[in-house]
Image (cartoon, protein in one colour):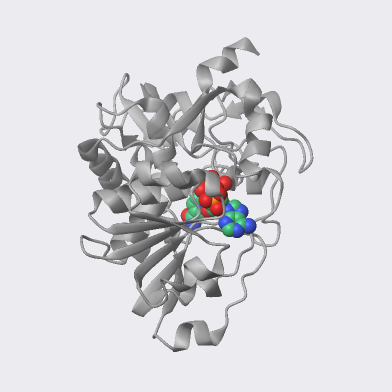
Length: 352
Ligand code: NAP
Ligand code: ZN
């Protein structure tokens, strides 16, 4: 066991502050990573503030962070995938049994024994695991991804969650050229959804509650922008969408989007507001619409997404911040005031 500097919260109402956490010594399958950048996902905010208490209560202290990019500093004796000096990424998953039918289908995110990057049990040291708002991390080599050399590391970090969480359902639901796709919410996930759907050749519409984001949405690759609080504007699109990806992080009327689906259209929820969403049966019945969910993506698909982003030169639009500004960033994220992802420059941790 060794010590690593990190930012942690002591309770749902405490700010994040510098602290020291334990990290395990390398086992033979592990890689040790010096963290360069870590994105701030809205899930970090939900978890730190214990907003998902009903489903996954937060254990304190918590160190969030699952959009990690860093340099390999050391590897265990059996590691073959990575070597010291490699640039790698770690997302939401750090362990799974790799033997069950989900793992065999490259869907580790659904493995009954999967372990998330933070707030899940640490089977090596006891207690819970700590995330990426930290100097370094140790993970099994399977869960460390190769980062394309042409991409800027600060903008790559968010791909490890926001990138894969949008890429996976876009693929699963067959989004290609000629499909009309909607993206609800232009935040961290939403702006990656727009970039990826555009790169796949789809016609992309953004639904936003923020009139000030219209120009950005078009610049990011949207073909049109719809003000979701304007009922008249929404109505014009009734029955026309093949697929809608809903990334909204707070309570909203899902029926107003379901009614915009074409026959057999699907709306996939990736946004995880703690409150329930009220579905009216007639929003689904009329056009044989379906409503589904999606959770990040497996390791193979995450690598595929990174390689796709490398080929298309796609990264997140980031505001790089020193870790000392993390609490301010959380407050701004809660107000949907970020263009479009905060990425923490972990070198700033040396100043604490
Ligand atoms: P984010 O950057 O804060 O973006 C969320 C966006 O939702 C906001 O920018 C805003 O866009 C929109 N929004 C906020 N409040 C709204 C409201 N009341 N009604 C309608 N729209 C609203 O968050 P994120 O990091 O992209 O994460 C989004 C959600 O996905 C979170 O709940 C997060 O926990 C979840 N998530 C899920 C997975 C998964 O595997 N399923 C993975 C990562 C994150 P506009 O200003 O454009 O309206
Ligand atoms: Zn996330």
